[in-house]
Image (cartoon, rainbow, N blue to C red; front, side):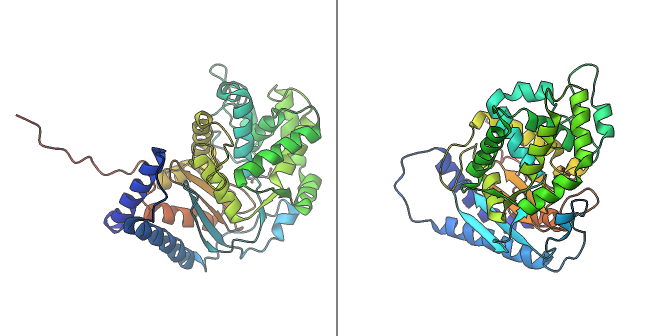
Length: 359
Ligand code: GLN
């Protein structure tokens, strides 16, 4: 039923994407009736999904970082940015939360861009741990005898190691280059929520231990304290839901920001980032997530989730209350619903209509 209801939308989306992908010097045309219908259906999908989950009360703000417990749990916004730069929103698009673990995606992207995909694969690993995001046991199990580490850049140990790989002569240089990099994905200058940074810095003894252990095992080559400090600062970068959707849409658009058309990263490196998101973006619930959406995604304990429909759009939802795994309850439900309504699961295709074979 969903398929037939959104058949027209899929067709219009496919037409729009097909024509822009060819990169022809087309004259700016008035949107076709089909494109207008597609746009209206996307907005309706956002509005109706927003209304459906507006009163959901499940989950609880993260409180192991004291500043996060104080964030308004009612913040609820949805943004979807198409690869042609069209922006759709519903709900609260002005409130900001800290990126938290969503930042890990963009630090991973930076290191892949600076050092190539092989370096991350051999140094940190690109396999699921199957454990919580801040598991210390996962570090003990990560040392596979052959075939490289069983770790990845989207859980805390691998993320702190990945941050330690960002190039820069001083801590400030590393930090500035990371912040500029995140800002390029968001198409605006981002900044740090100092209250969150201070709060997490005062209470991140577990992450300091993780950094030290990653150093002891050789994942981090030098200065684990600095790596953990920069990691904590990157988690404190403040974003609204449109920033997050724009960052996701830049990945959906092969590394070029669809809002300002600037090339942020090379298209050939984007699939490596998306693969790790598909593997580990929602930590130990990544399998469940992929089962229902088919899309690479990333959550953060600030309450945001981003998902990427390659070649189509980036979507983000902010809603701070989390489930046991540390993923926003409402953001998961909303993105699942919108992905289904827009037929955006890349594994879900209609069988090819076969012509009768010639006799
Ligand atoms: N800054 C958080 C931490 O290190 C990020 C965790 C998360 O978003 N899952 O614990």
